[in-house]
Length: 316
Ligand code: NAD
Ligand code: SER
Image 1 (cartoon, protein in one colour):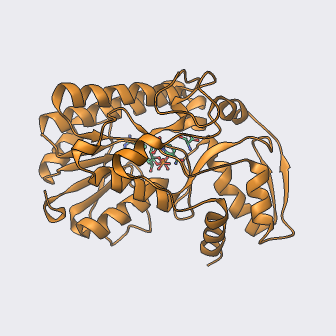
Image 2 (tube, helix red, strand yellow):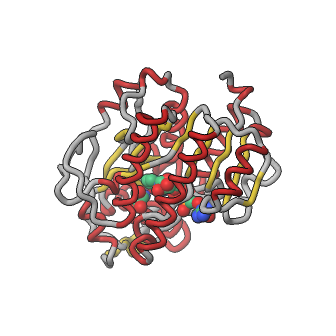
Image 3 (cartoon, protein in one colour):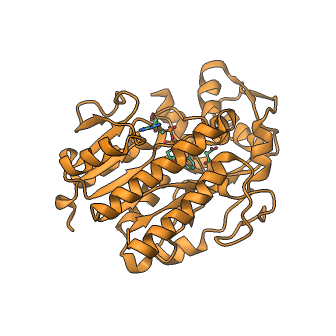
């Protein structure tokens, strides 16, 4: 189907990824053809740029009505509870992350949607997964409810593709860094707060130890990866669970040093909390060679380039 004929529903459009993904999709498919939806009110950055509906992904009937009424052909499902918030209410995180996905998958099958996008996470990996260059297929024993829900979700996606031919595609995002919309409660969110604190207060107390390496990615790369995967011919998409993608890995000490190059007075301290155990269970770096060879994935931003861009945008 040509871009003009697609009608896209973004669920969770007011969140950290949703705002930027909706903006990017509207550029490609046209403002009127990308319907933003969320439980929360519409994000200010999206106001006046296209249609918005208030929607609870847990209300399957209402979701189904919207898909039919709006002639939706593709769904991007972003509504979820992330790793750190999930540990505070595991039952709720499991319920939303699983039932939300199952609702969308059932409707995608029944309405024969063209494509569905649903993100997984590096949180599927656990302490027994390889720490360095963690491969696409490996031992996966997550310790957080978020990781468990993402891993189970990956297999539901694979099942719906194999059994009902639903064209669902997925990426295991690393920690995502951005300045447009606030993050929603992840373990990697320190790498966003650090920029805001460095600019406002010239100091930052980090919830992770200084040498905790984690895989990270700048939002423009994440948005591009998402769209490139969704636009790839189905024959190039060999992974129907979720793709590893990678851009950079750094520790709090390293990102602090990079920021200090631009703000010399910046000081960091460390007060690890419950998020340290979560971070310790994840790989330090990711092998994304399958995404590179299947659909040509290649990141553009490293720590240096991202830091420059984040500071410039937050200052302006
Ligand atoms: P976020 O918390 O910023 O946004 C999620 C949005 O979903 C929020 O606006 C929230 O109001 C909405 N929502 C919650 N419950 C809902 C419901 N019942 N119905 C409709 N909307 C609801 O999250 P995000 O960072 O934008 O993440 C989006 C997706 O990407 C999630 O699946 C997340 O697991 C995944 N992901 C994010 C990261 C990251 O670093 N941000 C990394 C890996 C994976
Ligand atoms: N950034 C996410 C988190 O920390 C990874 O999925 O929860």
